[in-house]
Length: 180
Length: 201
Image 1 (cartoon, each protein chain N blue to C red):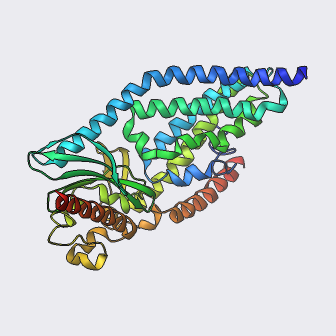
Image 2: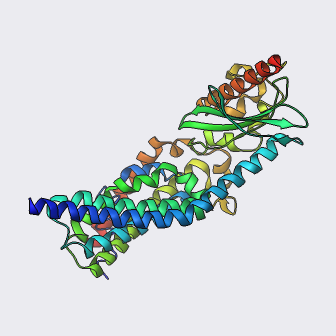
Image 3: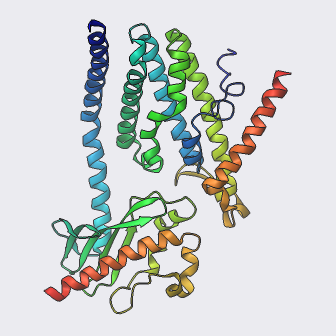
């Protein structure tokens, strides 16, 4: 029994020292990490708003949409969309006008393969979807891409994930528009 | 001095001891990732080797594995938090593989096989030797994969990237995939073992 207590105390002591150490480091790094996240989001939102001002955030308005911000001034919405890629879940931030047309989109968090799916992070990739979703339907299969098919070649899973997420966003914005 | 270089060839953790293969395959897509991962693994290895060696006479045998895991996990979490705060781009590209250093066999393997039986000084030397070996192994895999698979060598993303003319335009993309990583590891393992044989003679 005595031996057992000694072992338990030993392990407990190591755990306690570890906890104190981690708490100290966390208190130093947490504010810096939050600042980085906030800056990243703020710069993405300004880019998305294309001239307007992002309004107050609303968490999880619908399935597949993590957050939404109304664009004040020009109208429309900025959405944080949940997508599924080759390397697991991805986050896409996109802005839509009132008709559901995509204005700007950006692939944020993802674990896609370098040289393939990661291409979706490059400027220019989202051009294949820009202006679509309202009158012109959002392309969701490679066949609907026409000459743009080369942009997504080699990364079909990433393309399917991104396009499905953008379509979800566009459809939601159109629905919200009808309710108004 | 001989001990310091044991990790490079004779006891190379990746190619000879065949430890830590999972992160070696996963993060060796670019040289920059390999450098970051090597540095992170080295810092954890150094910290855990020193602490485990210091506590080796006080940790009872029955609970040594959980005790080691707590010590290693503490160092990994500290490195993870520091990277997220001060090297966010690198932290993002290494992603899940930083927390997974906790279960990297090289770290626990050295704690068990070396630090728990040797003095602090010797354990520091062992961490340097193994860290160096892991770095050389990982960077050589990443160098071959990035050159063939993407036609570039990324030291600092967007700032220090060398591109290789023809290969950059039409790379052998299989090397960017896990299958390519296995092929490269196979060939490099053969090369390192041959080099080990030659230098022994």
